[in-house]
Length: 193
Image 1: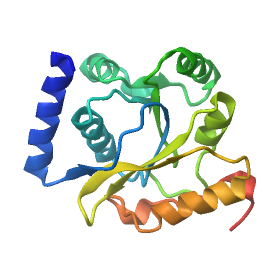
Image 2: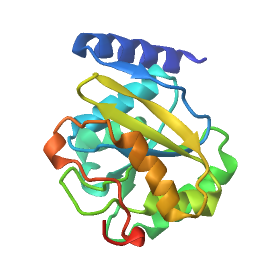
Image 3: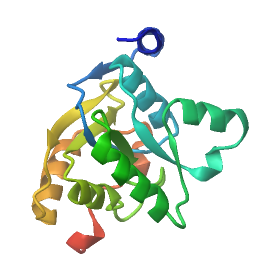
């Protein structure tokens, strides 16, 4: 492990100890990370600490408006990728191409797509997993237990309802930092609840 990752891991462990959060689960080698519940900007900070604690870089999609000045520089050096939400195609195509050649490709998506309560999750994670053949890893923040971590990793079957039932089951007992803003895991492709 190089010194860069050792330094990041040390920083993460100190900060996690200070805020009394802990990381759990087994880090995947390659895949699409589906992060939820996404109810606060602090989710990004906790996810970054999770990555650093596990000595990996996650390519987190972050709306391009945040990539200005020193914040933009920091986002880039920590692996974040700017996303134009009005026209995401070019960014997604580049990431899909990268996934074919990068042996440690981890793409992190907040499936809710927003920190506000919504009716449906965004289905981008599902489409990217299907297009690349990459497995999905469920990543989470859970305020009551003060845990941030990696959940199960599995291949999607193409049966959207069955796959989402599995995802709903996993996230059923996870509570975000602002629980009232949590969106129930459901894709438009499934139809109404």
